[in-house]
Length: 463
Image 1 (cartoon, rainbow, N blue to C red):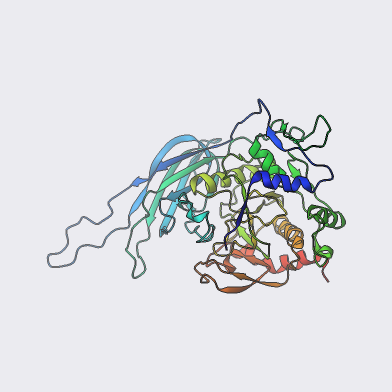
Image 2: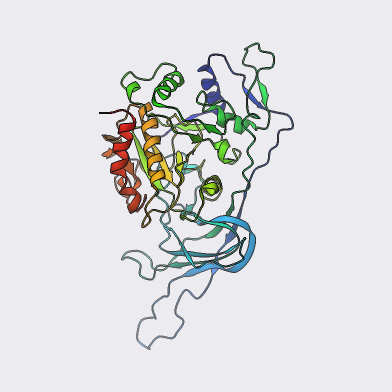
């Protein structure tokens, strides 16, 4: 099912109507700074060696076996970056091979060992028939890898030597490029700068300036009214009683009676403004699905070599990689959680709303995606991160009357595990691998989901 598009201004207007007094429409203040943070270097990969064995064969015998194709870049100095990934032209083409990078630390000037980049990333994407997928801008891409501030890079991509039967051997996708992402400095305007006001006090809802914010920033922030004031860097935590009152107010009294007793306490959420999103990068407007029936848990597969203070930079890098390198409309996940348990707003459109994400191909409709930053295939996720997933799902699923321990039915939009149109019974809190054949969210994080369901339900107050 396709999502429905809501204009940013429309969302801001709808949110404003939920307040006791009509808020003025935000406008870009004259002289407001427009300073997009970060940059992306996109460097084409080149052949690193012969793609075939040139040694003459024995007369009368077949030609010598073809060697795996290899592309990459020799070690070189580049502008500062912190995250890497490889993209290619055709989103429908899979990279069957191995991607490795070495990077030079900006701080120590030493080179890292070779690091593997996760090549199977197509399952973190919009559904096959979604407008986002058919935009013509989407590229094939590996998972991104966070390497920290670096100024040198070396890359090698080798096709797998033995292709499965029925597929052409040793061919890499065309148009491969290494993407080197610099998240930029975290310099969002202060929360007080973004406070909207009506200097005349006439309550007419006219357009007024929002100092220090662009129109895109103000509209993104307005989608979170009335949970936080316009321009807020975070949405504060609430206890269960206040969370219920907040949910009723935000829904303009339309929250169902069945859902009201089971809304978990709202966790603290760092907003897009709080982590420094450049709102000019994403597509304008917000796309919504009908409801939220399930939460899919992911790991970002971007590595564990980050400090919690770096999490906003990691998210800014993921955002740039998803939008500029991969061609998506916005960051794919609805929420991110760092290893210290801080929750971050993901795709724009409002933290309590059913924003259509691009996280679980085939099951983005009527779901939300939560990514724990890191790679948890062999490394256990920190307890703080697992607890944050439970707290977030207790609150957000509560808005839609979902019991975290229950099952729900989702209709597949197409993927490698379920055919398009098939109705599939899933846990309300599922792992990515439940909807698509993938390792995500990693064996170690996936193993924490049963306990997460129990904790989430308890936080909702369910018996």
